[in-house]
Length: 177
Length: 83
Image 1 (tube, each protein chain N blue to C red):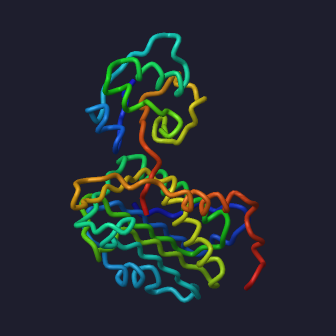
Image 2 (cartoon, each protein chain N blue to C red):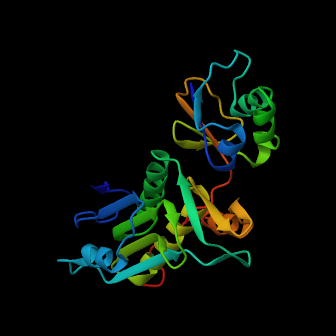
C-alpha cells in the first residue's frame, strides 16, 4: 500500500510525503527500500531504519524457526493508524513499514521500520514510536519451534511499558534540531 | 455476526472463524466472552481467563465494555507479539 498522507496540524505538506506499508511472507531488501525512499530527493536529511531479526533462541531455549500469524485486514489498518499518528507527531518526509508473516528462520529479517525527516530527532523518535506500537498493538502472534514442540511467545511487560511511554504528551517540535 | 479467533485462542476453540447469533442479553464484548465460555469445553478453556484476551470489532481494538451492537466481525486473540 503506497499512498500520500493528508496534510495535518500545520506541517508543511507541500513536499511529497510517501507512506509504504507492506505485509508479506517474502524476505525484503532493507537497502533497496532505503534507496527507494531517498531517490531523487534532496529534502531528506535523516533516514533511520530499524530491522527486527529472528534470533536462534527464545528465553534461552534454541529454536528452529518462528511462525508469525496475523489478522489480515486488521494488521495493515492498525499499522497505518500508527504511521498516521507518527506523521501527526513529527515532521516526517517518508515512512516505510514492512512486516513479514509465516515461517521465518533465525538470521532472517522479520520487520523493517524506516523513517525519513529533515533532521535526525524526528526520524529517530518516529521509528521508536512505530516499533513500540507494532510490538503491542499490531495483530501478529509469534510461535516458536523448540525441541519440545511449538510454543506461543508470551507478550512481555517491557514491551507494553515501552508503548505506554508514548501516551505522554507529544514532544516539542522545536526540540533538539 | 462473524467471530474470528487467532493464535492460542484459535487452537483452543478449535476453529478459525464461525457465524454466531448471540441472545439479546449479550450486549458487550465481555458478555460475549462469558456466553462463549458456556458453549462447551473447548470454549471454556479458551476463555477461562478473559482478562488476558484481547478483542477487536470490525478490525479496531476494543475493550471488554465495548458494545457489540452492529458489529459485523469480532475477533478474539492473545496479547500481540509482533515486531
